[in-house]
Structures are given as C-alpha cells and as structure tokens.
Image (cartoon, rainbow, N blue to C red):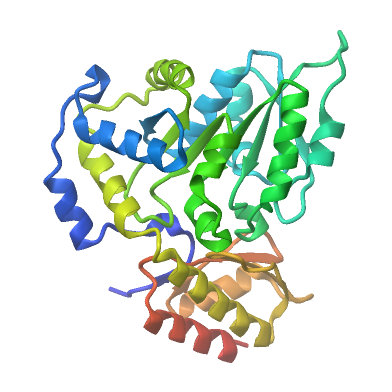
Length: 341
C-alpha cells in the first residue's frame, strides 16, 4: 500500500500512542446526564486557560460556531463576518438554517477584517433592514493562509462592538497556532470575546471535538442547543481525554509545524510553477500557480510523488503541516517541489 505524505489538512492527524493510552484510562459517565467527569475536566481546563467561566464539549467546530450564533442572535438578525471565513463558507449555510439570520460578508486582508469595516457594516435603525447583532472573527484565518489577527485590531473591533451593543465571537479553529505565533496570553482573548470556539482535532491532534467557551448563562443556553442540534454525547470522556492530553502535550510543539511550513514555503518560492505565496505565519501555506499552469495539474503531479495537498481553485493550492509530518517528510516535500516541472 502506498504511503502518502498528507498535507491536505491538519484534520488528518491520528492520535499518538501516548494519547491513545491516556484516552483508554479515562473515567467516563453519561455526559448528557452531566456525569462524565473527564468531559467536565476538559471544559474547565480550557475555560481556566482562557479565563472564562464555562465550557461545552461538542463533536465539531462547526457545531460550536453554529451554537454560538444561535445563542447570540434572534431570527431575522444579521451576522458580520469575513467573506472567506469558515463560519460562512464551509458550514453549509448554518447561519441561515439554524439561526434564521443572514450574513453580511466583508472582504478582508488575508482573511482578516478591520474595526473600520465592521463599523461601516453595522445597519442603521431602519424598519427595512435587519438588526446587526453579532461579529464573528476567525483566528487563525484558514483561507488567509493561517494568518493571525493583530491584537490591537481585535481590541478596536471589540470597542466598536461595545459601542453598538454587538456580541463578538471567535472561531478559534487554530487558536493555539495563533497563540504560539504571536505569544499573546490566552486569557486576553477570554476578556475580549463573548464566546470562543476551540478546535481540538486540527493542529492539536485530537481525533474529535471542539469546546465552546463563554459565561455560565451563555453555556447553559448553549448546552440546550447542543442537545437540539443532536450533539449530546454519552461516554464522551474517552474523546475529551484526547483533548486534555493534546492541551498538555501538543501546544508548544506547534512551533515545529510553523517551522516546517516556512521551509516548504521557501522551496515553493524557488520552484518553477509558483506565481506567489501568501505570507506564512503558522502551519498553512497557500500559493498561486503561474499563468498557463493548473493547480489541479500540480496537485496530481504531487500525488504521483506520494504528496497530497488541496486545490482551492484553478489557481490556488493549500498545504497544511501538522504533528504527523516529520523532518524527513519535509525534506522529501522540498526535494519534490524543487525538481517538479
């Protein structure tokens, strides 16, 4: 069987032997009955790490994002987000389906929006227009090439939200990549955002799950919506244990993923088929192929060399490093890129 180097996403990671052993030793119960102590430990652990009151363990980041929108809004209202953000582009129209709201999308810079843009997008009080009620940010920005928000810009956006009575949610699918890259204190985020979704199954390497964070009243409502959305789990402590292990052992090693991404990006800059590369801050590399070159063709040629990556469209390709990518694999990727075409 052919063994591939898989750069399609950091969601492809598999639990380490140590993580699996930790999972199998977990104490579990029925979480819907509030009896799974390992789930409770995970929820408290993450809430404490960000200085927030409570957490809610869910099957996916899509669910935590959509529950947050549901709690923060009423049907007929409007949510401001970036045009390429996961919550708008990759969650199957959930803002409309689950919450009865519409999205006001802004064209950001590498997936990031500004306070000025948010201010201009807020609807005036008008019988013909929906009420703006929520702003959603994504950090790191997936379609922005894993870019990180400048902290001062986040504070400016928060001020706009406060002045206009808006809630502020963070899709932190790769939250700890941003923390490692910027050296920001996680507690600072807990002070600014009304809710935060933390994904455990991407760069942190857990097999399943995300945690939604907020104050106690918010999480009480969120727990009800989790059940409504079909997200209530029973002996989920085995999965929660993987999240606990990841938080204890896999955060600091994210620097290695970022370093690997930089090495691959440098090779791409020397290649014959790359037109331009998004700035690489974390573990995501997005590049544009040259005119008269097809992204799909390049992806196919890389696959022939046992390297998997994702075409975004006809001209753009995404690569994502993660804990299952070794130094030896990076060496092969670099050699293949330089000799390809």
